[in-house]
Image (cartoon, rainbow, N blue to C red; front, side, top):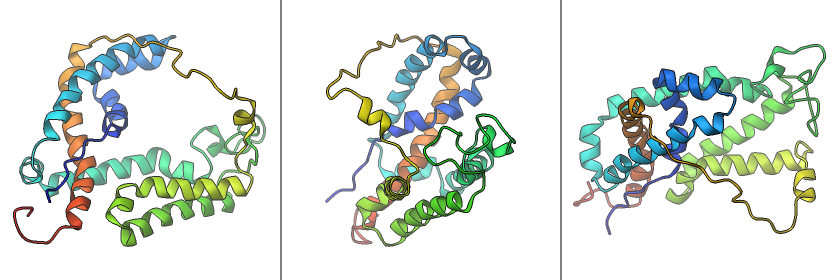
Length: 234
């Protein structure tokens, strides 16, 4: 049996934020445009071009990828990404939301988190929010420690599902939108044009190559975890 070389579509989506940070003028155009959807067309086309690098890397052996991206480099990058996410939005969302409600205004839409229109709004930093976040976080950790290789690959989904179930049972979620939706509908209502923004190609290739290996290293090692610790796999 050979180790699987997984190719994940989440890599392209999860690295969009990093790409925007490393392509200055394009980021300003996208975020300040009165029609961000139209300006995002070059991002889609450029992402499509850069995705071929990920497709090529998915056929490389884990041994070759580890030589190109040594653990010291990937570990440092993962730590820096995690620290950045915790500081920017992770801690704030754990407390109830990263919008204006974290400033605890006295009145207005964000007087409670996530907004006063939520099914069960609470002040930012409420114990209920902290406990719900800790439940999801601990579920992910326990899945990583004791789960099967398959569950370890979807540990984030496991944490989200468990947290969502508890949140729904506790009244933090509303089914009004689902109840008002039609029974059958056609979801594809927009056609996205493709364009290319040449100055963003090289930065996106660099970010895609790093994000690809960092995201897939966990899946590769999890797949190898169930194999004997000798032979050609190692």
